[in-house]
Image (cartoon, rainbow, N blue to C red; front, side, top):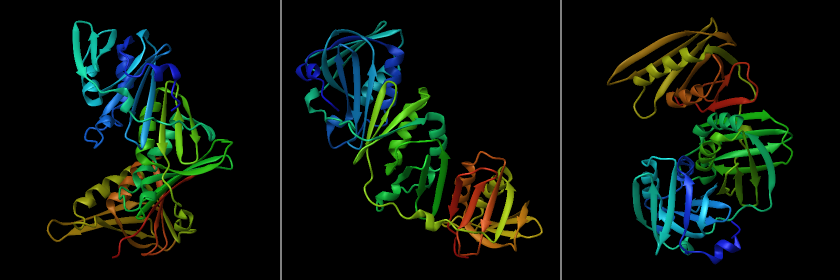
Length: 377
């Protein structure tokens, strides 16, 4: 982040400013998940408060994600201080009133709101790491609701295993006027595509954690700007900026994983499918969460599961089936993750063989596909 000269000169100088309490609460809530609580660097557990003529900046970082929030305020004295984030957030969240006054002396922050007053021990601001902004990069403007919907359709497929860092992010592609989000943990894969006329083209892998913070930050904005730099991305909102690292490396050629055809396609009711999978999951084999689907050409999908300890379950679902049918086994949890992300009343299940991936799609929706690897029977 570019250091403002006036702030740099006043670093660690005592502050005095009045803010609208609800706006202060809202800003702190957006920083909460980035503020560490057990970091090996104590300063990362803190929120940096910068007061200048234009208002107040609140900054937090875990060295992977950095957030800067801008607030207006009645400034009496400019300066900077860092305060333990959890303490500040928990305190302010329980205060009442219209305004809050912040003042500091000797690295102690005093907060006054209504009849409440508190003093919090802080740390010098010059120890807080600089959060660099992306000065040069490819810029696109994204509709908040569209982006949040797209993210909900793929994020659950990203890996949580740090052994393959590239799979812990969401592959984000802007190309030919379309935006594509892809996530996979190598057992299942989600892809969603929308045509939105984006101008500048790029492809980057953004950590899932970053995008989840973006979703929270963007709640009150109709749109936001994404700036893609060489090794960082920056999300620009009305009153805030979020900067994140890019996950380095080449994303797998995921297109080759998506089957080009399915010899059998069954269309089912999504909620009925979900309800029966949940029940089948109760009896699925411990560890693998295995359920078997038997697609029958006469218009049925039979779901079965069994446990040597608990018993077994079977259900027959009506379906519109095209093709010869066949049997295939899946991890029930993976199927449920995909189905719960669909917003249509019906979906299609495509299968080729027991060893080929299954293809789930919401009916009559372009640009959505969910791939699940089968389990050995």
